[in-house]
Length: 110
Length: 114
Image 1 (cartoon, rainbow over the protein chains, first blue to last red):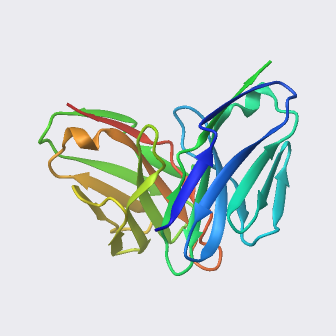
Image 2 (cartoon, each protein chain N blue to C red):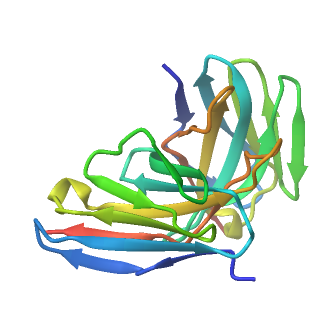
């Protein structure tokens, strides 16, 4: 069964304290792995799509990496405005269904 | 360009009442989706549509119906609401073709069933 597990559930950082969020997945065949950001009371906002192991993508202070079993979202020198819930999702080959993880709530304190 | 919009933003229903949630997108996307989001759980797919006039069941379709009469609109109906359907509902859309992956989400509808 396709599954996505994110850890930790919540992460509290001081401003400037770099860290990583983990997304472990099992899927019959990976079509793509996605990272979204979700602010309270809003819909998820697309960040990255990764397609194959070894791929990396960056956007400002965020960097996403992918292996055959997991993905990491690295946050370098975070700022309070990076506080949000980060969602990981996978899409299997041959289908339209996207499986989401429960998310990691990130709190960055000034 | 409004992207994906949802109406209403909030709704309170009594058990057994019916309602329709409306999703509209102005990006000319072929694919549209309805998800629900519950505390501690990931977004779960209810129904989806790959084009005007077509719909398909997702992971948790029971108790819901959908219609896609126009390309830009995707309606989610609850015929007889139950407390278990209390949730936040999100609509999303994406392009057809190779890059079907990137889904653009609406702001959500918070539904409470008493």
